[in-house]
Image (cartoon, rainbow, N blue to C red; front, side, top):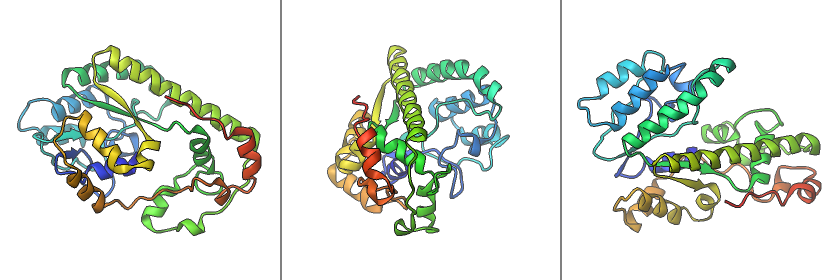
Amino acid sequence: STPIVRLLDNFDEIEIVRQDASSGWEPFDLHCCGPISLPNYLRCLDLIYGDQTPYMDELNRIYSATAKHPLRAFDKAKSVGFKMRFQPQRDNVWLHRLLKRPFTYFSIQRFRKNDVFVFVTVRQDIFRWALSKYHGDGTGKPGHLQFKLARGTITRSEIPKIRVDPDAFSEVLEECERLIAQKRRLLERLSRSGVRAAPMFYESFCDDQAAFFADVMSKLELPVTQEDIAAALDKGTRFQKVHSHDISEFVINADEITERFGDRYVHW
């Protein structure tokens, strides 16, 4: 989803809400916004998507109370969006659970009120998704190789191969299945609540980026030409795909793992 949102930022018709810094592309995630309160988060949504003008001063006054950096200015006349993990921003597990229901309920209310189109990113090939999560930082520990590649601190040829433990990997697969079921329920709830929403498939993005963004722009009802899409893609992004489709490039016991789990794919 990070390369997707960065490529969307290349379109003249779109404004991506992010922090006024080189990082901060997930403005309402805990590592960016800090433990923002639910009322402040909802007020930020109203300022981003509502009719109030001017809006940046009040928005950043509220947002900067907990955030690392303020938000950069954006033009409401364009299609405005941002990337986030859809959850309350609390590192305390009990407070997180307590706020989850009101966070979801009131967020959906704001989306409906402001006619927000919600895209939910979905990776159907949970076999390869789970392998990516299991691989983590390249040693089997949690981490994100994608960001190391983008910073140039590692190259694809330097990514180490690992041996995958079948039992531990099975648990990661089950977690991915749980997460994708959760996303399906979220999409169903959004639709029932009158919010325009659609899945955004990782496989479609990898297969044909031009067709992928043409579909996104059509759903947003933006008059974007094939030339516009080509120009946005030509600008590119620092991010590149970490793992090859051929898992033997990073998994030592690839044949064993593929034979046992290779058919795990959730067809939407």
